[in-house]
Image 1 (cartoon, rainbow, N blue to C red):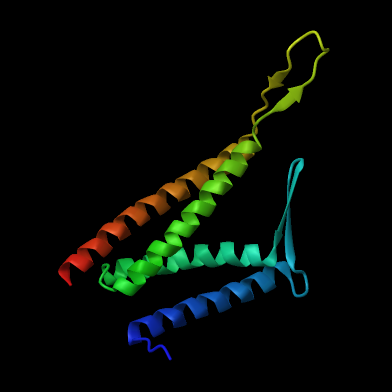
Image 2: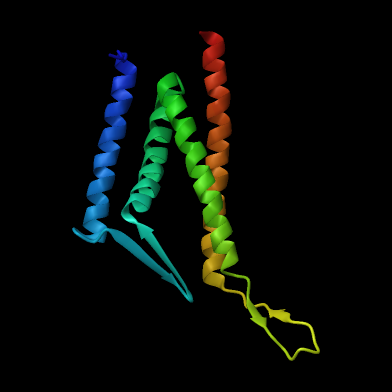
Length: 161
């Protein structure tokens, strides 16, 4: 049997509590028995399973909670630092995919003219998706800064030990 020290058990309790809050929040918003989330953005229709929604919300809640905990503790808890590093890396990857998806919504219309001329793309700017994409990119920059600072602080903590 694997013995876990007190700090690791405490972090598992935090993650379990966040998972419970996340599950309750999803059930309250999406509804009992509805095991998916449908998102319609203009002509695109995105369907997320409840597992995907749970994972996205879980990572975002964990990011905020662990960032606050680590900042209040001044990066002294190495276990929390490592969990923040893993969560931020995962969230940063998912956020970059979201930015790519949102950017693909602003590609415009492709017009097919007669065969004797070249096709052209008629650009049509959507300010709503451009604004959403801007906010998501700013959120990703915050994540990357957090990832960098946490990595440096973990290295300093290992250097001290």
